[in-house]
Length: 249
Length: 383
Ligand SMILES: Nc1ncnc2c1ncn2[C@@H]1O[C@H](COP(=O)(O)OP(=O)(O)O)[C@@H](O)[C@H]1O
Ligand SMILES: [Mg+2]
Image 1 (cartoon, rainbow over the protein chains, first blue to last red):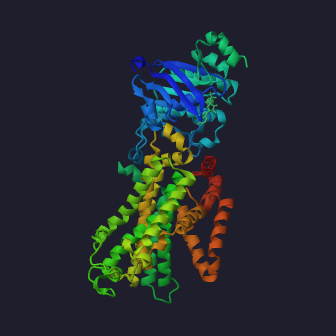
Image 2 (tube, each protein chain N blue to C red):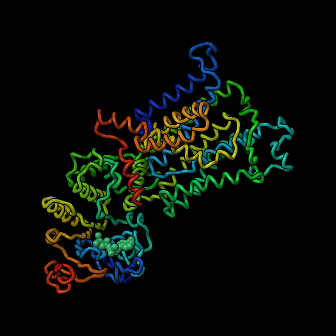
């Protein structure tokens, strides 16, 4: 794939159907290293399914998904893809509920993950420093020893983002991070994501237009499984098809 | 590398359990052998053999809890690993009989002479040596668990489906071991053992030593389990139990995680079976019965899965109950067992130990170590 050279994520002609229903239809998209991208689109547009395909949860029926300019992600499973440096936050926040906040972060840290490496693992000072730093960032330092199950919805979202940070991925896929958050939490999250995007590529799926405006990045509009428009938020908001398909409703 | 593992394994609670087990291993045999019969503290022989059985059951329940309580793998076939360990020990004991058998053949066990076999089948070779049998006690259940787990976990068979195929596995072995041509004594199994490591298997001292060995095996296994669940790997186990798919997206290879604990657990079950057989004096295909494996699940649930002490307490309590019950009202035991399981599931979902430590935990410290078995159950139900 020559065209994929120099890109971090390159999707070309990706399609997938569930029982004949085309959830993703000839989708193409290019993400540069270090770029942050917002993806918007109506419910059922295929945003989550796109992330499923990138992270190896769903195999596409056709098309290419190239990571880092050369790795064909369709040939790998979730574990491999995560190890390559793709981190994902789920639409429904998913943390390890019976572990403490601290343990959640420790599990996510970018360390060897094999059976014997974890069996004989000894937490180092560097681990502690890194976890404390993340706890500071996601503002959960006071709740570090509490079970993740006892966190509020918004805090779980943040913990999951913190776990992604601990994972140190090259590419972060963030699915509806501000769902269920208060306005001030939403603002904080936008700030946090902009901060994160300084050091890695981020793809954010979100419905909240205020939030997307706040991110101030290139926007891709998805509808019925393909790209409807791409550009700045103002540019795509002016697009006839987008208004008809999404904003108008 | 191994030091942090051991230090973690020996936390305060675990040290207590190990100390108690070692104390039992020392003092119970003394009370049996050295104290005069009329002493208040004398422990009679029948009690030793019962306690030896219970200890083996406790080890089996501990093994099951490692995979079920910590990793969410509800194995309904752990009796198979127990029985295989038992057969490996039984084969050693058979070969120790030598010319003392009914037919007096120096090499062939009686049942082979009876079947008119002329020579020892290949898989019986080596079992005249204890060290070889000891390796097989670990290797055979471990190998079966490895092969089974390799396919099942790689194809992502989970939940009820996995439980059903583990039942099928033990049932298939039951049928196979019933056949005379298999070479394991068929229906009658292996019995009439004479001695073990040169000691008369019927002697009081041997029986007391076997009991002590069972306690020590339980203590060592407890330490290993404790080290596993307290390591970072133990946290991965619980992560897999509660959110299997999520842990894949963090780069954990779930199939390897499961395979490792499944094999370790099967080996522990094998050791339990191997210690059980010389104490009860027989191993037959009945040990593969699917119901046996289900009973182990009940013991573990009663005691409290997801705690390491729970399955030990559960196995002992339920079996003490069974001993009394089957003597008093033999025909009602299965009903009682069923009622117990339903009752525990409804009223004590965390089992005895889980519930007690939950109460205690609420009173003293905010952090409860394993409160979330509910969410695992919910996840399983949602699938
Ligand atoms: N595993 C699946 N099986 C069947 N249909 C699915 C599956 N995953 C997604 N879909 C369907 O694909 C469409 C796109 O879903 P999704 O990607 O979740 O949309 P979005 O995240 O944009 O709201 C929906 O109609 C959904 O019902
Ligand atoms: Mg979605």
